[in-house]
Length: 266
Ligand SMILES: Nc1ncnc2c1ncn2[C@@H]1O[C@H](COP(=O)(O)OP(=O)(O)OP(=O)(O)O)[C@@H](O)[C@H]1O
Image (cartoon, rainbow, N blue to C red; front, side, top):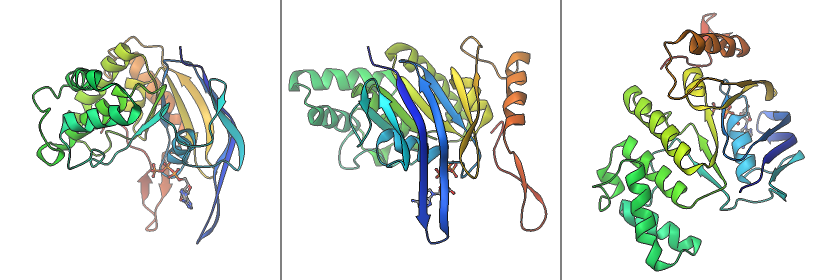
């Protein structure tokens, strides 16, 4: 069984053209094995910096991240990332080829690769498209392929940085439901970033709400609703309002108009 993941008093600072940015300040939480955590916050609050730190792409200024007993210092196969962009699969390999190649790199025996790849392709609903190349797939299908490839590699932790952010509302709703079903099947730990309140509640066992400048944890909110979750229920709506009130949802734009920093129901 995979160990608990701990983010311990993590601070990250960037020095850029426009001076210093304290992207993360004293981020501290732990995640149980098999837990589904959503991270919700307005643009620029440090969500991507947090997930990139967990992935090992970003060195902390202070603090550390533990996966079980191991301290994260570099990227590793125990923590795989799925991004928002649709071009994550190798364009010169078929869907099946993308998965079997990843399994080969991981060192899985040749005899097992194709069967494992086909199982995960089926799991994400891409059966029949094994021989298709990425350019022959829709955005949603490419995301399914990227998710299948990550899951086939059986990481301890799957890190998802707004993976459904570029999808139309209907495809997004389908993939949200399917991700929950797959997660219940495979039991991976998932850290899922979103700026969408409804998505955070639909998916997460707990929602980590972040505030901006500097990026801090404002609150960790458990979601005690049975799955599948229905946004129309009073319990769901009550949570929606609780999270909404935690977020710094509005600011004044240059022309004095109120701009929304997070989206709710899209
Ligand atoms: N490489 C970098 N160099 C300088 N500043 C950076 C760098 N990466 C991020 N930042 C700054 O750190 C802060 C947090 O950025 P980050 O991308 O983590 O936020 P986010 O919550 O993921 O935003 P979004 O939802 O818009 O993607 C921002 O102020 C950003 O400008």
